[in-house]
Length: 397
Ligand SMILES: *Cc1c(COP(=O)(O)O)cnc(C)c1O
Image (cartoon, rainbow, N blue to C red; front, side, top):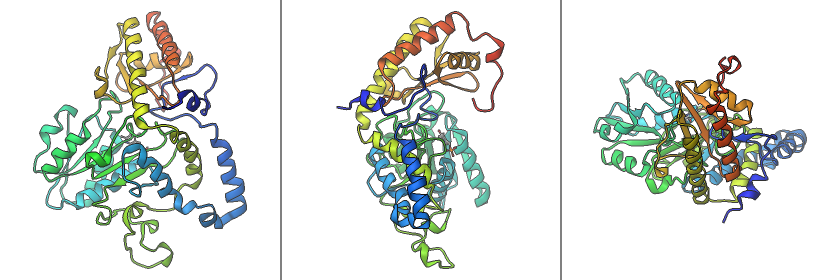
């Protein structure tokens, strides 16, 4: 049993805020500032360069990777941190494509996050081998897994609607067809009870600043299945993925297992903050989080639909088919979200008309959901969003 009141107490939340945007950026663990302060003053300040050994900076990407492995059902020793998610997508995709040299199609879906598609386009140009990025509707992915497909590159939870792909099923289909799978867990890690090992995923990547609460700019992670770990060739062959970085050889030799997916110097300070978030994750299991997430999303949908007939549910109604977010379509969604933020309910807007709300059991409870739904009801029923100050779009929506 997880004590969710205890986990909630470990996050800083501004007064009057109900935070339904942990799917974009998790809140601050209260322990993070002191840990960052220690990382700066005691480690960087006092240890200087010796911090790499004495404070264990160099081992941190794999150590924290192991703690994330538990949350995504990965084998220990097969997840490593570093870089940003876009970079990790590129890296996984490049390695995966090399494993299927006789095929040219990367299959993805239109619910994927644009950066994943953009990285694939860039990689295709760089390779110059005539690869094709084939983007189909999410519900048509399975039917498009043919023997042309080299790599199935899918984000498990749709960032707009929260629709959840069946990882085990699609992975099996892809592998039966001779393809390699790359799963993006950006909206999965810390949100749903995923099992990358059980599903047989070949590669998985994700970020740590969304549901995992690692802080803005926290590093991404990459998983390579144990059966590929010593065979996958890293396209980004940086020195810290080398077999012997401090031998300073003139030519690259890939390091052992997941270590080869490291590129360059890890973000030590960002990892210090992430560590405090992972301390909180150690207090629970993904099964407990998932069960409570479903309670919260069901309650939210129930309350909002009852009070707001003008909002159309964009997320799957069946909780087994959605991640830990709920989205509604509304033509003036941008203004509505701004009006909600002005009243302390922080969600976000995704073009063209999606109002998106993330549910995060570590720091949100049933009372928060009831209170948020009541504010949404008031804003929608009284058209409080219909004011000029809510209609000017900011750079980040
Ligand atoms: C959030 C997100 C990203 C963002 O990538 P960064 O490199 O961390 O900015 C990429 N892909 C998906 C699926 C995402 O949800």
